[in-house]
Length: 92
Image (tube, rainbow, N blue to C red; front, side):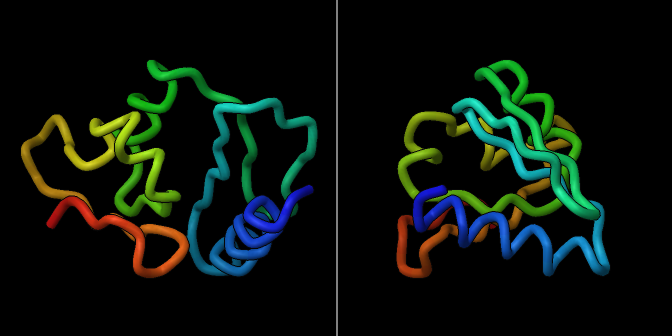
C-alpha cells in the first residue's frame, strides 16, 4: 500500500470503533477491513455510496472528478473532509 492508502486504512480503522465505515476505492481492492467494509466502486457505485453516507473523506482530486459527492438527493448539504487537510473544500 502507498502512503495515502495506508493513511486512509488507519483512519477507517479508527473511525470504525464508533461509526459504520466504508472504505471505497475506484481502484482494485483485495483487502478486507477489520471493523469496516472495503469495496471497489465505479462512478455509479460512488454515487450510490454518497447518498448512503453522512460524511465523506476524500482526496481533493476525487471531488473534481465526482462532484456528486458534495450533494445529497434529499437536498441537504454534506460535510466533506478533504484529505489531506488544506485540499479544495466543497459542501456545507
